[in-house]
Image (cartoon, rainbow over all chains, first blue to last red; front, side):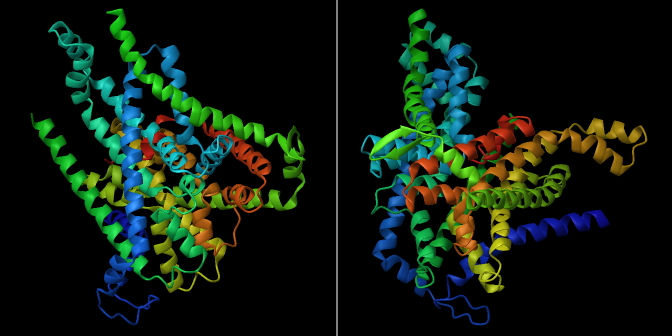
Amino acid sequence: MVKKILSIALCAVVLLFIYAPILLLVVYSFDNSTVINLNNFNFSFGLYRDLFRDEKIMEILFNTIWLALVAAALSTVLGTAGAIGIFYSKRRVSKPLQAVSQIPVINAEIVTAISLALLFSMVFLYRTYFSLIVGHMVLCTPFVILSVLPKLKQMDSNTYEAALDLGASPTQALFKVVIPQIFTGILSGFMLSITLSLDDYIVTAFTKPKTFDTISTYVYNAVKNGTNSSTPALRALSAIIFIVMIAALLIFNLRAGKRKKEERAR
Amino acid sequence: MMKLHFSRKQLCIPYALFLLLFVVIPMLLILFYAFTETVDDKIVFSFANFANFFTSTAKLSTLLMSFTIAIISTAICLLIGYPIAYILARSKFRKKNVLLMLFIMPMWINFVLRITALRELLDLVGLLSSQNYLNTIIGMVYDFLPFMILPLYTTLEKLDNSYLEAASDLGGNKFTVFARVTFPLSMPGVISGITMVFMPSMTNYVVSDTLGNFNITILGKLINEYFTTYDNWHMGSMISIILLVIIFLTMLATGGFKDSNTDARGANLW
């Protein structure tokens, strides 16, 4: 009994530590004073109104989202093709490819970032949209490979041969037989890429065009220049992102859990 | 039939080229820059950066400081993460997946925003202006704790109960069972957790800047400064090489890189 109470208490304390800052920001996004003051709470939607009127922040939000979508889409296509290629290649080819593919996963992000800066500055593409998107693809694609490969391994390889026997061309077999069977892996690779891209600061900072900002670089610079305290609308922005992400994750996972249960019931 | 297999294999060519161009060549460029210098607009081979790093007290003390911060942060993550992972993995609660998700969900939410939120909280409790080092460590733990909990949970969850039952049937008390059976069997998770937390704690300067009021220089920040502030890419590359050697040594010391590390980045969440 004592053990159980202690366990619950520990979990509660850690959860409090994890969620206290998030909760604080969400609650005080409904208070329009510049600095958070626990003794003084004036309920207002003021920050949200300021946020949506702030053209700069809206542009940055838009930038962050399109960058994530483009980088994730390209990474998913490249990574899915790569995973299928790796799966059907001989070990002599697939092993080294998978090993190199792990480099961006293990490497410190700052090292990836400066390595790309060195490369792009040599070919005069440093701090362009091209370097930015490639930078995000370097971060995301290995994770697409890692999400898709296990699905390929689980797949019944006879179905592909059966499709060919039944007269499908290899391309048709690929799109109508292989892709549908690994689709959940592709989808999780895509979602993972979006979250990785949205989360990134360091690679973005080293590859982005000078005038381009994502939420990460904008907020970091605001803290650096001391302007974050004069822009309380950022609290509302954070609050929206926290709530949207938590809701998306909960819905996606609860549904995935339900799907798994249904599969097991069958 | 031959032609067909060939065409499926070809699908990895774009990715292979991508890796060559944007992973392998850039890494070789770091190596090249690290062992060269720019003299009169010409790039010449040199060990000067290497020698400079190991004779500069400022750089060596940054290295030591990064190490200290990373070791303390990793130890705290392990001390908090292990019991949490153990409780979650051993619990008979039916929806323990949902519970686990509550603990690891933050790793999917923009870390700059979360660290800025933590900054507000530390400001409220009065720590922000005075405790740069403490705040940095709190921030590292805050940011990287999920990366410790997830691999630990995965290994502990898979643990075969019969081993533990056998151990207690053979007369082991609870402590012996844990120390001699459970803990050794969970070592793969401990190792992945450590590698997942240690390296970012040495390099993620967003955390140390935001919470240490831009007063703390860790290794990642030093590399950044050589690239942006001092405009000495050769020295920046040399520090990166030293960092890579440290990463490699940690891998060797902890028994190498496991697939579970990538699980820890949470491919199973989506």
